[in-house]
Image (cartoon, rainbow, N blue to C red; front, side, top):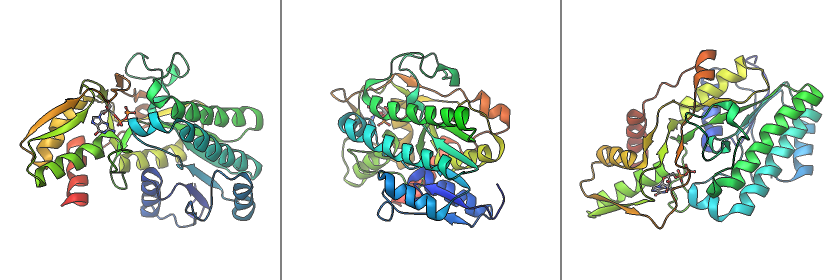
Length: 306
Ligand code: GDP
């Protein structure tokens, strides 16, 4: 990817897309095509067609998606399926039509079967039933993976798919109804501290295991793979370590300095019991995450709340 290459980042105002933009800018790239969702509705086929016809980007990072935590995924099932399929179908197909040199599609760790062996290896895709709370999102992402693979097989397109683990960091969503667990906990503990509350409510049983990666590590991995990986198989991007939701809550509690107790609301779903990425493949390619969870949470907390 030459320094003057024309790069389209779809979703450049989202958490992942904005981190990729920061990373590329730091490396000296400057020829970006960027459109907000008001300027270009990626669900609109003819609008996306006209955009590609006019801009003809050389490289595409497909980081635009409708995303959310366990409650949003479970509640807005139709929107998660429809919007994500439309966005990715339009961009992937137009990237083929307009001869994009390389496209990277960002998937998710939720594409793997609910009860797959852990850690999750890339080859476990489509070997079992999905977790129900995020099935719509996962089905859309699996379709995106298969789009990239199929356009490569049929039309020789250099389209690759990467599967990030749960992300947190700059640009995250702190809306308690829609967010993922980590930003929700940071906000809840912070507000509980300010209000001198006696407890913080944690959804579910606290036993599910999750892995968390700082979005700046993700951006680093994406740029690394864009430069160094040209194969049809998907690649996991993770840190290779997980912890329980209870352990996570205790860690956030310590960082924020809250002294009350945790209360588990078991009327809320747990979701999948565990989703830890096997990161051997990306590690063997020469990349490793570098931001520790504790340092990452501290930085986010200080930047966003203090
Ligand atoms: P998931 O990884 O797709 O299950 O999505 P989430 O990040 O939303 O949830 C991860 C786990 O954290 C689930 O077991 C949730 O029940 C649990 N959790 C605990 N407290 C919260 C909270 O305040 N918000 C969210 N989103 N999840 C929470």
